[in-house]
Image 1 (cartoon, rainbow, N blue to C red):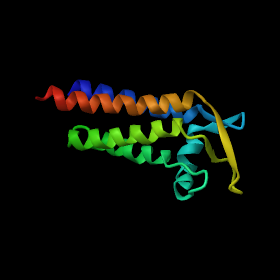
Image 2: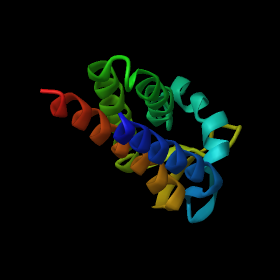
Image 3: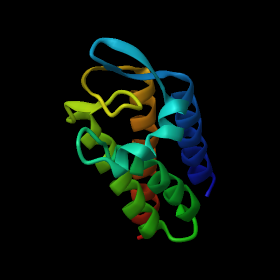
Image 4: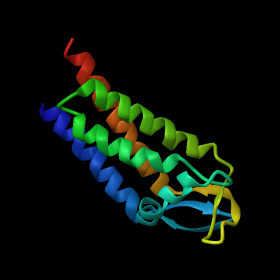
Amino acid sequence: MKQMKIFFLISVILFVVSLTQKTFCIDGVCEARGILNLFTGWLGVIYTKGGSNAWLANPLLILSWFFLTRRPKLALTFSFLAFFFALRFYFQETIIKNEAGMIGKITNYKSGYWFWLSSIVVMVLATFFLIFKGR
């Protein structure tokens, strides 16, 4: 159980660090920070043109944290889905870049994205470890 607390803590720390970092560049401009993405990213889910469903990884990650010790198989499902959505963002070419709905090209990924993705990977590994260690 102590190992799970460590995995959980590492995942949360990586997530919090990701919120303080720049996450990606649009048309060569690297201003987006994780905290801004967290609070506004849900808007991308409702847009089809240039939108992004990668933000869905956030509630899925939080659900995996919640279910880590209660229902590890469910936590694994949530963390794996979070990983899928987060990794899918890496292959997305465009995104909405402003309130007017203009589309921009994603030109680079910064440390905030990698910390965020790492947080999710830690949860995938933690839940996998918890499930298969118990066998």
